Length: 283
Image 1 (cartoon, helix red, strand yellow):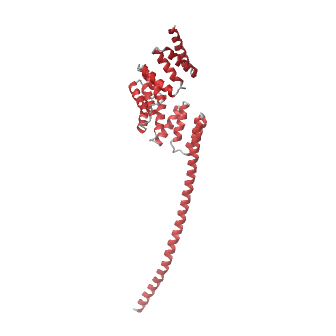
Image 2 (image 1 turned 180 degrees about the horizontal axis):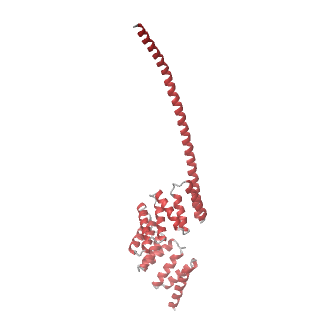
Image 3 (image 1 turned 30 degrees about the horizontal axis):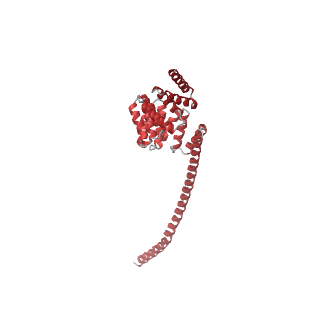
């Protein structure tokens, strides 16, 4: 009986010692884990900070390069701009802007097959941006795909319902399709949002002439000339219409102004022939 008691007491004493050891070991172990965890957290924080700095540096470089490419576009150095934008796309393939700008250059160069995929990527990357839709629409129209062009302009107008140029461009396509009333509605909307949009004034003037509304056409073209007196085609169109209205002197004046300003030999020849007819009629 005593042996059992002593044995039991010895066991309790041993356990008590072990507990005291555990009290020391466990807190030290936690500190060690905390130190290791803190070290890992600091390492991760430093890594994230470094990555953020690298990302910011790359983003800044991308923006600077993209801005330089746009400057080259404005200067007409399209090939240089293309190379720069392609480099931007390699550095930041998720951005929609460089695809859009590169597509615009391709359209300027008449390379519509290369422009279309870039417009597609730009639209997919940013479906709430109207400009790539409008660019793709104009490219579709240039390729003769008028239905697809109108569908894209519809989407762009849904995104930017107050943008006059979108209606002006869609109106021009309706005119090309022979849908004159729809074209006039679009030009009217364009000029409602921006009465001084020369493209809309010009195109509505041409449309009104096609609809036999010559006096109204002259008013639109005169308004456009007042806004942009250096735009030669305005004088050509107004001159032709004035000639049909029998306003010979005014027509001759417009056609002579056109000839002095234009470098288009084909249209200069038409203007000269019209002037010759007016001279014959005057005799």
